[in-house]
Image (cartoon, rainbow, N blue to C red; front, top):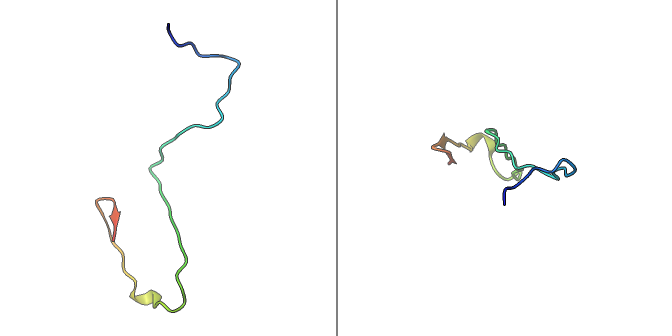
Length: 46
């Protein structure tokens, strides 16, 4: 039996891959922000 697209149904959500990713977080005041370093290599943030 072949699948047929229904014209009366609407999707509730869609999975879409985005090439953009953003993540943020807060750090405590006891850390010296000027001494923090990070590097992105091969998709890994170190």
